[in-house]
Image (cartoon, helix red, strand yellow):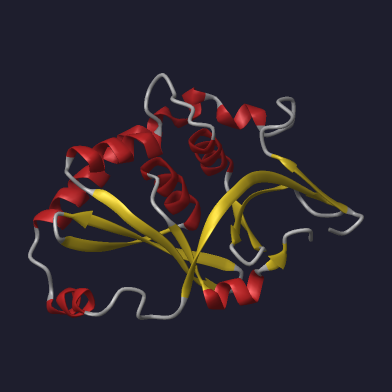
Length: 202
């Protein structure tokens, strides 16, 4: 880590400037959006699969490249001289390579809550999504952070509905927050690890 950069756990200092971003009132409106998500999921689960979807399901899993399992090591606030503060979720593979991913404050709160097994008095967005999926008989099989393009990470959530697998495009932060709630494994493409992976003591 450079001398002009320091990293601290996201929830270390309750008096930092991000504290006010986590007022529950700020996020109540997000729950309304989940009604639309539920409707989309019902349409998705009830529709007939296309031929391209059937072809994809017939292929072996992880055919699109080597992917390694990673685990979330924490959420941090990065303070770098001359740069705006940033919130990061960090993942680590079994070879000691770590990859920091910039996330938003709401997603940071959702991930920290899942890591700490905190149960909010009323379900927040990711908890509500988990509840909707569970009531529909859907589970998360795995999450794959599979691409990096111009500094932006991309991820897929793989849902299981009976014997059917459904692939959903997602931001890594949302995918991680949901994977932690379902205790589903998280994978990262080897190409992304090679491009962004750093030694753990970086």
